[in-house]
Image (tube, rainbow, N blue to C red):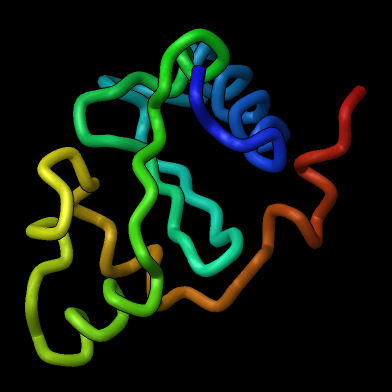
Length: 106
C-alpha cells in the first residue's frame, strides 16, 4: 500500500466497519479524511473491508475540490475514481469521528 501512515486509523476503522454485514451493504459506503491540504476519499467501487490490504483511498487537492464546488462544478471530474459524494466530504467541516474517539484502538 502506498498511503500515508496518518491514514492507518481511518483504514483500520474502515476495514472493521466494512467487514461487518450488520453495518454495511454493497461496497460499504464512504469514508474520507482531510490531511495536509488533501482530501483522502474512498474510491468509487472499492470495498471498505479491503482497506488494510488495498489502496481504497484517492487523494484530491482539497482547495481545488472546494473551488470546483464553489463554481458549481462536479469535483469527481478531478479523478476518475473519486466518490460521487466528494463534494459533501470536501465542504464538511466536522471531525465528528475523531472527536467521538472512533479512531481509538481497542
